[in-house]
Image 1 (cartoon, helix red, strand yellow):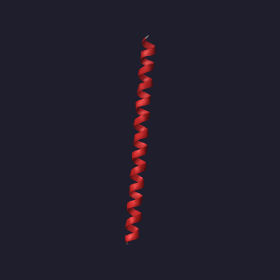
Image 2: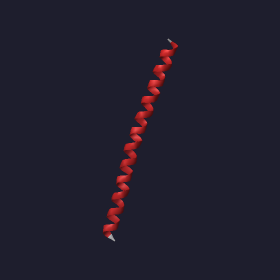
Image 3: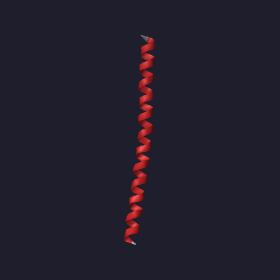
Image 4: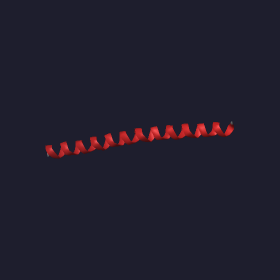
Length: 46
């Protein structure tokens, strides 16, 4: 029972860590895309 609990918490922790890493990557990609779109709009304006 104790080993199962340790494995379960480890799996939950690893899933959370992966989710946080992917979330950070998504945020960076979104910021990068919005930055490029703003630059393109400014370029089109000028």
